[in-house]
Image 1: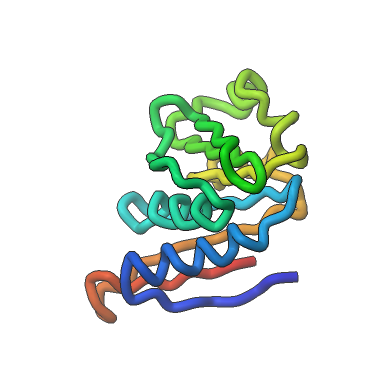
Image 2: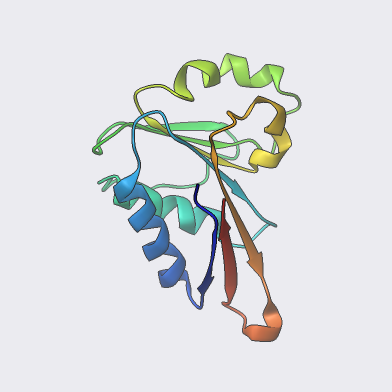
Length: 142
């Protein structure tokens, strides 16, 4: 079981950590991103996608809920559930087929749908601490 805390001092640090995690991701894994607005979830997602071999630009799918990327080593299903009203909306996106399927599922704001997240999901929580610098982040992986 993964259980560690990593310090990031820049966007590049966060990106590189996520890229490493993406390079090791396996089919069926679910990664849950949690943290306040502006903490770096999308930077993390972009690094993760790069680790899967994606070359196309990634943005947060806030208004579409789901972006699918298939040009990497594994398909990536990138969710942003910030605007999801309830977990029933997730069924319409194919969530139950994607999570645990042939690709990798990455979910921003996953705590909002925690009751449907698989038990073996990897949780990544990103926190700011401005007392340690504007770009400082603590990234907890469980």
